[in-house]
Structures are given as structure tokens and as C-alpha cells.
Image (cartoon, rainbow, N blue to C red; front, side):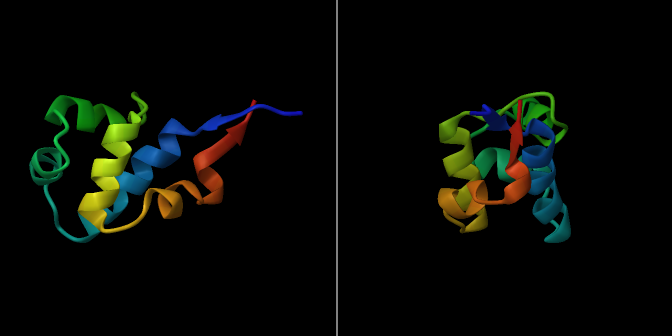
Amino acid sequence: MKKTRLNKNYIGAEIRGPRAKFGNKQIELSQKAKIDLVELKKIENGFKMPNLEEIVNICNFYKISTQEFLEFKDVWIAN
């Protein structure tokens, strides 16, 4: 059985894309999702994997469920 893991780069793009599309600033997402701005930048650029609390807070900001966010095919990669 193949192991799978979350794809940091895809998650970062999925967070950055809608934020930019809707004209939200990083500082706004950072404050409302209770994530340090430096950490958010690392997540958006694929250098850091968000923890569960950060994923939940980001999903709440975008008004989507964590299940909906994590169901995207490209979120997961096989090892």
C-alpha cells in the first residue's frame, strides 16, 4: 500500500489563489485566521505545512469545510 502525504505546494497555492483573487491581503487572512504573518507567507509559498488548527481557521475564513478543502485530488501525493 502506498503512503500518501499532504502536498505543501498545492495547499499553499490553494490558500494564496483565492486570497489574491478576492483582493484579500495576507495581513487580513493572517489576523482573521490567527496565523502569524511570517508563518502564513511560509505556508502560501510551500515552505511550511499548516497545522490542523491553521487549516480549520483558513477554511473558516473562506467559508468552506475542511473536508471540502482536503478532498481536492492534488492536495495528496503518493510517496
